[in-house]
Image (cartoon, rainbow, N blue to C red; front, top):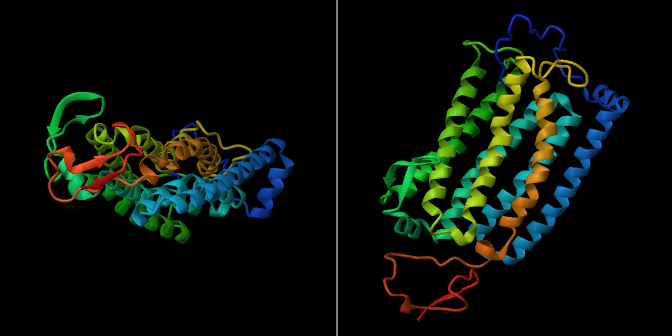
Length: 338
């Protein structure tokens, strides 16, 4: 996505910055003339290739072992986030004039992935009805790390989780489309920002929407800790939180640092959109580091390959209606109605 910027102070100006990004051929000449940039390009390419190879293997693994179509699609999309981050960042780093569009694609992919993650959580429960039955009467705090104030969930809890988390998917997708249109039209100002710039309102709405979505994710974590503990719900939620930070909110911080002079306008990143260069570089490294953790919790039989008990109607009051194999804590138990 494009970098948000503020008016620079008197002692910091963008007058020494190139107004436009160089074309690909000139930028590649700069890269190969600078040993450090050449090394970074090699690192980016190697990271992307390694992540993509492990991604293909994980997709084949899940495709052969997860029979539920909806759950399989959700896992596919979540596993695809880090490879997509690496690929679009590599392309943006090599083709700087398309870097804004590449960052927009990375942010958009996460926005849709957040919807699939919520769908996956509901699949873990066994559907909306099962989630409602298990979450109802659960007390959760309204503020993170604070036990008070708290609320008790009712039958509308799943609906509100869908609203708080799903609004980010809808709003972010629309705003990214608008941002891409403004960028291609040349109306998106990357050096300064004012009350008359549409980008100011795009970033403000994005920030508020992201905060609401993060709050919804953390509330979903509190509501599901007890019921989905065996499905590693805590690390999975934090994976999605971290992915939001690096793909959607990190570029906001980099833009602020660029306009305040913390990211100096000098070689090798010497254009007004230099924060996008840093975003491409950092996002590749962060996605590469995150991907093994994603594989650890999403490319697994526990909660993904093994079927989840689907509860319809009221929850059975007597466990004798079900025959369970294995230990009481095993995730590999099977349930059969007698």
